[in-house]
Length: 210
Image (spheres, rainbow, N blue to C red):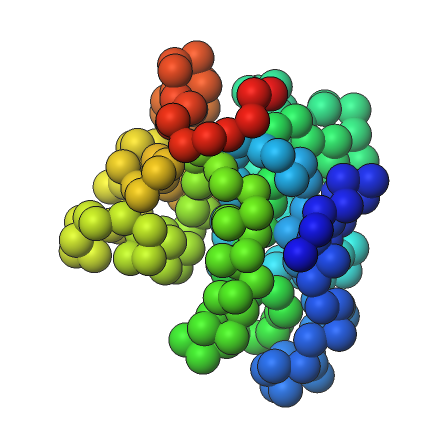
């Protein structure tokens, strides 16, 4: 699987007509694969496409949740404040979800998360991020159980919000859903992530220099 950085939308050319979850084929507008910089240090992972993402085909885009999320990235210099809400200009960031299709009435089932796992695993392997940001409880549980040795009972929000957790070759910095954060929680996450960005966060694992 080769990356195509001429496009930030689905740069790995993943299956846009996937029918592994028949029920979701009836409720989705489109399959929403990852978006952003294929050489990014920072990988953000949500649970499933929002209504806006389902409409525009880009994770964390096109609605109020996207606006709140992008404002956080803008404060860190990771998103151009003048860019289109539906096609944000990201810097050193890649966005994706556990699942690629939306049901407007329910959260993804365990089977649907399992069906999409190869897509997420391929993105993590190809991007080889330094920092993974699970957004929301479900993303934290799935990413934490797969990629850390931290006991599942110790992985929960809001306790882990803005707290760096050692993973296998990278760190996790969990985030509460942007629409559910208080101003204080947003400030804590921004300050914590800014400090991490200013530190020597890169691991020794054969990454190319940026």
